[in-house]
Image (tube, rainbow, N blue to C red; front, side, top):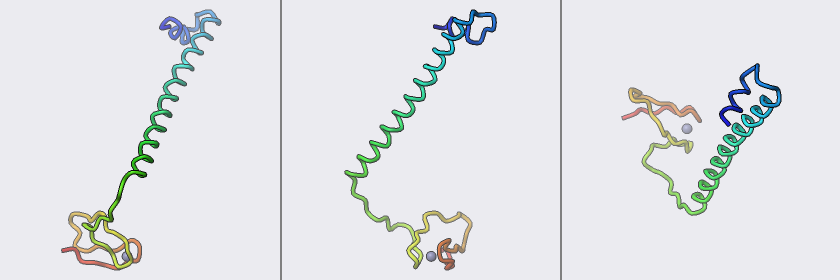
Length: 93
Ligand SMILES: [Zn+2]
């Protein structure tokens, strides 16, 4: 198999051998892609399962704007933030 792959890149290799090498290369790449797709599918499935079985609670450890937006991140040095949603400004204590 290594010989086949090497001859793919070798201009002096007989045409048939090179074709064979290309086929192997293609199936290698295809196999890797398939594996990746399967992995993604499984991950999506697991995440869906989790969503079905999970109970979520609203997190209330983060400040909320009057418009309902949650400030999930506040820059370290900011002493004032404005709501990206409605523009209200708040002082950060
Ligand atoms: Zn707001």
